[in-house]
Image (cartoon, rainbow, N blue to C red; front, side, top):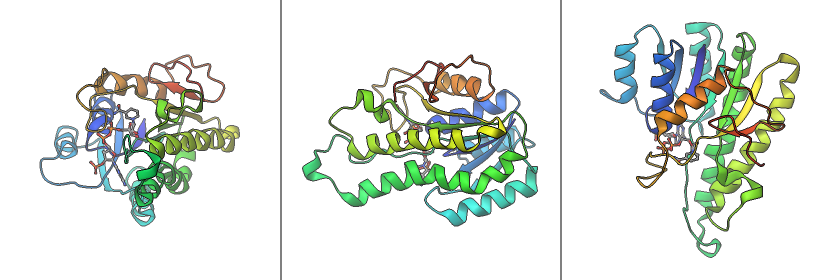
Length: 232
Ligand code: NDP
């Protein structure tokens, strides 16, 4: 598969890029910093024919349009999109202390980011085969399990889940699989050292879902990385 992946240089995104390459896929990696000796540079050297790296900030529509233009020239079509880039701001802050610039920024990255990606990459996806879209969500976005904290993050992932259901309906006649996937609580900069899960394991599960290997029965497409249904 030819897979567009945002936030490919760090955390879960880096493991998704590496695992996808190990499985023989081509990765169109969106990164904000491509400095020498970064993880994506090392993967480019290891898999010179299968990695295309583009500057892509999901809050910057121009960078996304440019990346889509380059991808069209480089590969002609894509088969998968993983909206992985995300931020968690105002962690644990009471409502009385929220900084609304951070709240808006969180919505901008976590919700408008995947929407912008769809705006510019859907035409290329339509040209692909056995297509699938995965929006990396979180259990924090489950209304059913809502807790009184991480306000901007929770509402952003709930909104992303809504966008996932809308998108699924939008591309229904094209037979494109669309999922919002909770990757588990994993050891990354965001998840921290106390997290109980490993990004390698989540990356493998997420790629199984993208490849259509799992038998998924979820009605609204909100699942965890093992394919198990999550409550919206
Ligand atoms: P990290 O904080 O470790 O990495 C975040 C990634 O998002 C980085 O690659 C970063 O790029 C990228 N990113 C942030 N802002 C932007 C932007 N504006 N444009 C492009 N890329 C951006 O987080 P994780 O790897 O843990 O998280 C990956 C996804 O998994 C997120 O969507 C997160 O919400 C979700 N998730 C994570 C959980 C966990 O326990 N870790 C639990 C549930 C969900 P850069 O390197 O340039 O900063």
